[in-house]
Image (cartoon, rainbow, N blue to C red):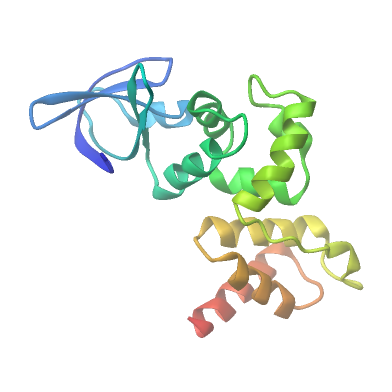
Length: 196
């Protein structure tokens, strides 16, 4: 299994393929379209990779962050999601934005991905919530609390920083009942730093 590649970008295409030379060998790597601009020819690069093996091909997928690779691997484990669709999802949404869409039950955000209609988005919403371990908090029951969108943004930010769903759930339960997003996020990070 090839877990990462470090080398020089020789070529890149608008379709999301880059050619990375590593020790004299060129690896063709498919990356999310959002990562293409940072991978200019001649530039040194480091990509976390996933080698996808089929009967007729071996395809190497590359990602600038470990979170993107891990999210890709979770996505391809979902029913009806192959590597092509998983890469398309990550070309439109960062892992943090995808988690935020799942938390907010935002079907419209999922339908922004080419090839994903309403029905597919509904199925993905249900399945990915479980697979990506998105905390399921009913924020409408927080009396006089911060707006659900502020809570959702704090939750997505903490998940994006690598905190576990349990840590996020615990700290959200201890946050002040109201306040601006910035204050809530600072308080959450302070509490998490103390508990670690």
